[in-house]
Every structure is written in structure tokens, then in C-alpha cells.
Length: 239
Image (tube, rainbow, N blue to C red):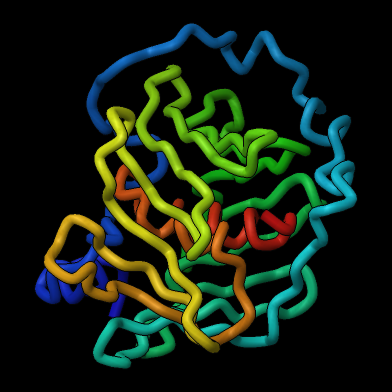
């Protein structure tokens, strides 16, 4: 099952649509804050700000295979890591994307045919999803000093608030409408839809994965591959 199949399965189950929107497609407009264009910032800025600067955050490795499942237990996708490469496979084992870890600060994202479709840059306080030519930022996830996160588009549009809670994290819209919650219950780390009755479980894993990585799968403005890449990078950096 490819990305289109994954999207259809999730939509039919009334869960988050891990879409087929490619890197870089316009996703609408909203409140925008001015930011300098990528070309006005140093191309080595991420390397100059090591993500290990905060000693409270520790790099997280993955087991060779880490599976994610729908609420009914159905396998939906896995990360399979071997050295500096991570394969994202659907429930039937087909490759959807490959992440190449060029450095702790830079991850190249390729499709199943090894065509570069984007990059994720890790800084000490943020993660930046970029186009293949690295000239434009699509999304920026920022970690605040209070442990909360904020996400904006590359043009400055604010699209998500992610707040740390006693149970995990809550994903909110910019106007503070609750969208999703991430909870740890025993060995199960789960994403719940907080807009539906009884906050039904959407997605879960029983492997070792950070809640700060799991909330990325509730950021619907991103495509599935963008979610998977950003979630992996957040987990790798220790949240």
C-alpha cells in the first residue's frame, strides 16, 4: 500500500489523513509574522548550532524496526533503521520514503525511487522542513524554553500550538482549539483525537519513541512523509 492507500485507510477509519500532499505544495493562508528569507540566513547556521547543546536532551536511537498501528491494531507504517539510513515502509512492507542522515543536524528525504524530495534541518531549538533545493523553508517547529512548541509555515503563518501537559502533549490551533492529544499509557504511546467523543485513539506505538515525536502525526498541514521525517528528527534530537 502506497501513500494514497494509507491516506484512504486512515480517512475511512475517521483518523488523521496522512496525506499525499508533496513537499512544497501551498496549503492556504493565515496570520503571518515577518521572517527573513532563507537566502538571507547562513546555509551553515544549523551546523553552527549543535542540537546537543542542551544537556537535558539526549539523542534517541531506534531499534531496527519501530511499528505504528491504527486503533484496531492494524500495522500502518514502520521505521526501519540501518546505520545512517531509515526506511519508512507501509503496512505491506512497501517503501514510502528513505531518510539519509547526513549529519546530526541534516537529514535528506528521498522517495522510494531515491529522488530527493526535501530536507529536515535540526537546530538547538528548532526543526526546519525544506524543499529539495534547500532554498525555501516549508515548516518550522520551534521548541520554547517552557517545554512547549510552536509551528509556522515558512512564510511565517502560525499554524499550531503544542503544549506540554501532565499526560503528554496537546496540539492546538493558533486560536487554542484543542485538536489532538498524545498520552503514554503503560507501553503504549498514543495519539488521540480531542475533537471527537471520548477522544478516540488514532495511532499508537508500543516501541520506544518520544511523545514529542508522536505529536507531529497530529500536524495535518504536513504530508505523511513530512510528518514521518519531522517526527523522526524530533525523536532523534531528544525532543
